[in-house]
Image 1 (cartoon, rainbow, N blue to C red):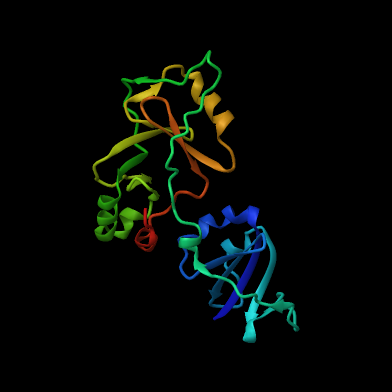
Image 2 (image 1 turned 45 degrees about the vertical axis):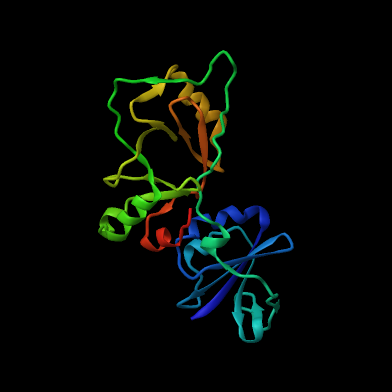
Length: 234
């Protein structure tokens, strides 16, 4: 096994989010940079790590010496860092505070009861029930699911089929998660809201029946591996 080290700008820390479910990765901060380290079975950095917007990439050798790929002499020594598992460095979270945002007053955001039967795409459930289910469910039932944890002791689960748990179900209109049985009062709002509020940093908007919503940042939802669920503490 060899140890790789990757250095990113602090502003690119969010790019680490998709790696949270991979075991063995550690991260630390130092002077406006984020350091990532992990082990590779061969002298080959995993694809997901190679895709990071890195400032520098190194191989770590004896005496904490850092070598650039292919170099015969060390570039520098690894600084003393306060390493933390990536799951702690970037904890999985669902934004706690609802963000009631509005378009111009001429188009207030309101939901209304809908007679349409939309297919459920997400479930907001109790965290303890989700964790218990995930501990005993077959791996094939977890494979198509992603989840995020909330400080309110809830779990938001996306995928198909959804687990048979109590909770609030949502359907997807584009990247807008609406409570099942509800739709926008004005259909044009769906397109306007997505164009105005979704971005590379915001993957979904989660609505309640009043028209308020919460932003789900890109990378907030992670694959429902048992290890990721065990390491998540809402």
